[in-house]
Amino acid sequence: MPKSAPVPDFEIAGHSVAPGSSATIDIPVSRLPTDLEVSMRVRVIHGRKPGPVMFVSGSIHGDEIIGVEIVRRLLREVSAKRLAGTLLCIPVVNTYGFIQHQRYLPDRRDLNRVFPGFAKGSLASQLAYHFTQEILARSNYGVDLHSAGLHRENLPQVRISADRHKAAELAQVFGAPAIIVSKLREGSLRQAAADHDCEVLLVEAGEALRFDELSMRVGVQGILRVMHHLGMGVKLPRKAGAKSVQSRRTAWVRAPEGGIFRAVKANGSLVEQGETLGYLADPFGDSDIPVEAPGGGMIIGRSNLPVVNQGDALIHIAEVERPGTVEDRLSDIEDAIFADGLFDEDEIV
Ligand SMILES: [Zn+2]
Image 1 (spheres, helix red, strand yellow):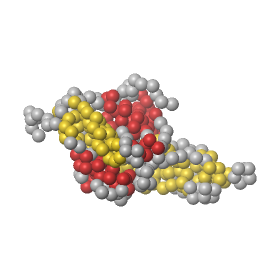
Image 2 (cartoon, protein in one colour):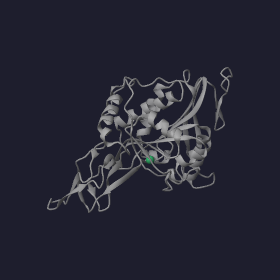
Image 3 (cartoon, protein in one colour):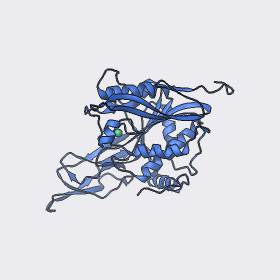
Image 4 (tube, protein in one colour):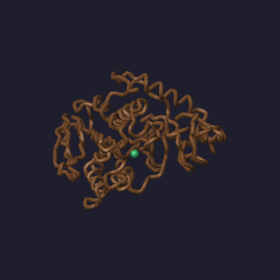
């Protein structure tokens, strides 16, 4: 588009949004048994200047709420007057799960396994279909915000697939503590996005149903950095973090038997092969065995429910490419995240 050409209205779900303005659009999804309508609500910020279309989505899994707070904070930093391009924010994609504090839809389906969806499919499939048609098909870029499942927490990390060079570049710009290169899952939003030529960063941070200040700050700053990198006319967080730690292989350490687990390593810890990650005892303490790291790497996720059955996933370890630099990088990233003057609001503790 030549520079002088006026930016056209942004069309979505039968509505149009004028350049330099924002609007909240309800995309109808279904009717509840009570006859109340359920919509997927999108805040459209349509910039005055031309630029890419980027979406930010949260609560694809209804109990993963950190993304909702990331979107709330992000919206304070973005104005339609300064924006170049269009930002689509969908803080709560899976309303059904969100209001019930549940990961899934009422039909027990996982929304992130039914993409691109089908207009006449299951409820989950219909919701995925609306998202694909209205959001993915219109977007050049996207950030999909997730958290670990119930009773687990993730070190903030960006997941990308091996063959997406642009996504790899954006993941570096995002600046989360870790970048995990992982395979695309069948039926995932990320896979459907690839079919629409939309580059998506999947962000995993914190725990379901809980807030976590580090995760939220990493999320907001990462999105703003990516938008700045794409020339979307936003202010850049003042201090740049260190380079993310990258990994191509991760594995869960599982409980060798049932018991009460006491973890002694936190997320972000660097561990060596054979190092003790925690102890597994019976309730009387008669048996108390160490659980050791089967290989070296960085802890990127862990269970925080100490009562475990044999085979339960306890600690998620990522093999890292340059282990010698991990601890310095993580502390640099954390310092930058908390030093940033962008946030004049109270820290959630
Ligand atoms: Zn999720």
